[in-house]
Image (tube, rainbow, N blue to C red):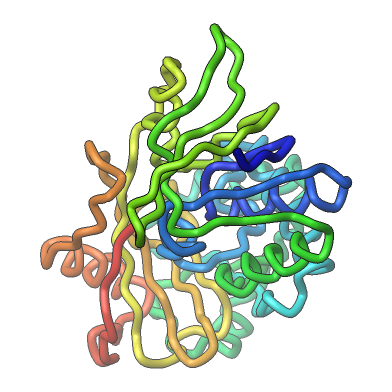
Length: 306
């Protein structure tokens, strides 16, 4: 039987980060992933490195974590970060009271939010709707989640970390209440075998509940699906957020030569569901064109969900 002190289940951003962290500490660690790396939620998001501004009102603990992570990743993963900066804009249809609560939330959370006049806002983002009445600059950025994750893996390997892709966990081995390994299946050969461990880490994201069930545990995970749109050019120079209560379709993230708009949000029974609908696309376009009025003039490359 193959063995490792720690086995990590799940090869997304969280799993590979844990793999690297433990390997750097000298722990004998192995990661297993049922498909290729970075194929779930970590490959199907808008690529925003949050400043925390989006959570400054409703969840200040998350906002503080975001700005701390933002600062760390700009330092240790700077080759993966496009430091475009972010802009929060309030439209004349948005609640002005929310703006003041947001400003206070940013102060409490340690997020630098600089108010700029409208002339400066339109100079920086000339395509913005003329319905913008207030604007702030924040330290949002775009991040290449694929590159960041693969560099985590490459670093982990240098420290002795191991990984197996296309290796699906089909059982968790226990003695009473003590876990001592996993049973896996090779996706190509169909071979089933066991891997021993002292500690098992569940980094399955939307699949975490199903993984826990194999160990006889109940973890209340409700998969949530969101759809995003990719446009064929850089509509915005900054990450542009609507300054209102977080909702669907209120973030534009520039990546290289494209822009991603997202996202919607709906509960689904199965994390494998990455379907999209025309209705969601139309909804995103209708909301997005309130911020960029000529949004439908740009070519839509694709829609995707995760």
